[in-house]
Amino acid sequence: MKRPTAITAGILLFLLPLFIPIEGLAPAAAITLGLFLCAGLFWVFEPIPIYATSLLVIGGQLLFMSKDSPLVLANAWPYPVAQAPSSASFMATLSNPVIILFLGGFMLAAGASKYSVEKGITRLVLAPFGSSPAQILLGFMFATALLSAFMSNTATTVMMIAAIGPIVATLKPDDRYRTALALSIPVASNIGGIATPIGTPPNAIAIGALAEQGHHISFSSWMLFAAPLTLVSLAIAWWALLKLFPTNEKKINLNLSGHFDRSPAAIPFYLIGGITILLWITEALHKIPSTLTAFIPIALFPAFGIVGKKEIREISWEVLWLVAGGIALGNSLQNTGLAAWMISLVSWNTLGVTAVLASFIVLGILFSNFLSNTVTAALFVPIAISLGTSGVLGSTASIVFVSIAISIAVSFGMSLPISTPPNAIASATGLVTTPQMARIGVIMAIAGFIVTFLFAFYLWPAIF
Image 1 (cartoon, rainbow, N blue to C red):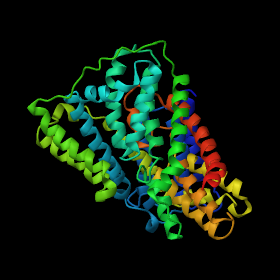
Image 2 (cartoon, rainbow, N blue to C red):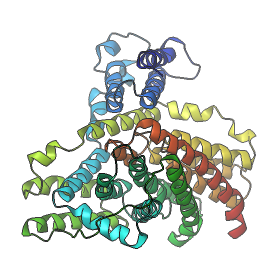
Image 3 (cartoon, one colour):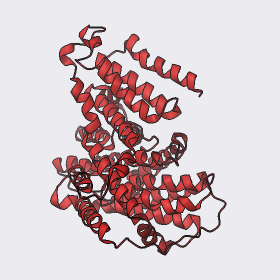
Image 4 (cartoon, rainbow, N blue to C red):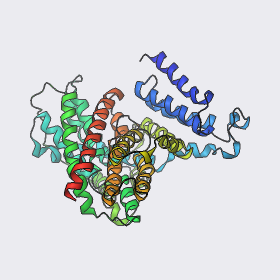
């Protein structure tokens, strides 16, 4: 779609819900729907930079939904001022805890780059995997998935994106394998979080909601459900990336002689960075939120001179704007009731178990491209459980399997830079365009639906 056409279409999509009333949709939800449609189109076709679209989302909320806006105060449309949030609530998305987590990850990446840590990581990761492009890609994906099963997907992506740098530098600028490497990290990170209860918050949501109904899922039981599915999905992603972004290189000659910097100046980085990563990995034990831990490098790296003004200026600040816009839109989808309205369009009680399972998986994947995975799971898991308790899903096992399937499905919503934090980080490398990300995202959405449905409907009942 050409730029003028895309911009015109986006504006029309924004205005459509404002001037054509939709039954059951409150004014705030109608405005959010317009922003949602416009932003979705802009993010896909990029008539303006994707981070600019995110800022337009926040700007639109401030102008059309904030109680401090002159349009709202002037009653430009039937939107009660008393129900409108303050402008500060919309601006707060720019300092959301997830943004702080990103900034902490960027600080770690800046320090790692300064002390060439990525060379040591590359040597450790790739030494067992040979030198063929396919094996190297598999090595990165396996290491990334393994790390993200036990620590923050965002932190994992920051570390592993730094590790691909030495390989990207050896490839020709037009080699599509550069894109395969850059995409392999977020894809593997998103998939790897499925494997364990602590890998991603949606898993914990499903486990907690089921526990309240008396269905207790242990750590090992979850892994029996999810780890095989993770491995199958990872293999599909690896195959798809090799097919979508092939290389003519038969062998990549890597310099695996790099070692970790042992100079006195690097010691504070290793100490503070190591404590940060250790706290991220062991979050399930000490309960300190990963977003709080992220502030350790933010505060201490500049204080100890580990990063300076030069490194701080080089941080991808536009990625923080991009993520903030996604968070802002997700919050409005939830807070205005638009997400609940969309869900209510489906007559769940008239569907059988098979259709309910398929519908939840599809909707979980679709919604998680725009809402956070956590919010999407929080929306759908309670609905699944309520349908189960009302008898729609039949057996107790069906309630468990559908709930777990929903929490797994949301991890396959990875078609846009704003879909997940790992996607946003990969987008910031400049090696990936939104259409390229969408291609692998759509493939993984389809694969995720098929794999999750088959496991939930056939394999889990047969085994458990």
